[in-house]
Length: 392
Image 1 (spheres, rainbow, N blue to C red):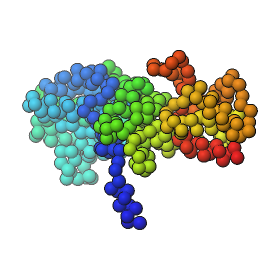
Image 2 (spheres, one colour; image 1 turned 30 degrees about the horizontal axis):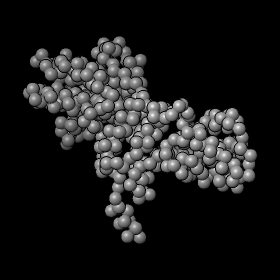
Image 3 (spheres, rainbow, N blue to C red; image 1 turned 135 degrees about the vertical axis):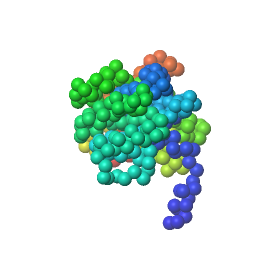
Image 4 (tube, rainbow, N blue to C red; image 1 turned 90 degrees about the horizontal axis):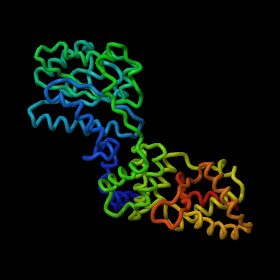
């Protein structure tokens, strides 16, 4: 048993840096977020001369809100230091710290890790924070991630108080800037006083990534996390196609990571489309027997032909012509009369509607235009096995 574990622990891997596939990893460059970073830099220019600025970053899951904010804040702290301005950057996840007291405690332990976790009221903690900032002559850049959890549980009092810190300072310096991050528009829950400190014009809205933008993001992570030539271009394209439906970069990176794990489990040197399909099958529910049983025999034979073709070629896509050839042979194996092209096309549409396959038009490099077929949810090998059992 020990030798099996040892073999796996010291076996070679396609991955060279697992950290680069972590959700918390922030690359030195963020693809397709340059314009938003420029806008943040313009908005926060006053901070370099000790004038507070607030912002709200909103967008669906996986659109790079947290990564972009961390990238910006680390850069701002570094640039300010070179100019002699001290900025203390604190990032709080409000899903974990959803009350005013817990948020302030998170901020104060940044300055003093031994700060007691009880015994101080919210007002007292705010006073301690004022003292800390005055003593260090520092500006606090506070990021409240998933701020909707704080607003829902505790309201907007703390947000208002922090932005009014500046009223109590006699030095002419304004010591606290706040960046809020949320998937939702939290302004609907703000009262008039809080809205006066967070102008709607300070909102930066991130849209879902397009399929082509996800290709760039996955390519970047491949170069950072994987050894050279270990991830096929087709695998990157397939990941982007699957994650492109939701525009979610987190999902794309998770697929890449799991596909890499599958390649390592198989002790192979390349991440191929079949590993991507296996990753998706684990991330979402695997195709159920019930859904397959709802298909007619000809549809099952056609789906089996797609699985066989993709498994044999090891590719992400098969053309309708290639599938039709395999379908003819498969029908012969099962002593069934193959249907004409038009009927086969109807079966393809039904299989697509049932969610078993996805189809897209061929792009550059293909002769003429044809439909390309892929299995987005399940490895071809697994699907073939299920179908052959059903058809016997």
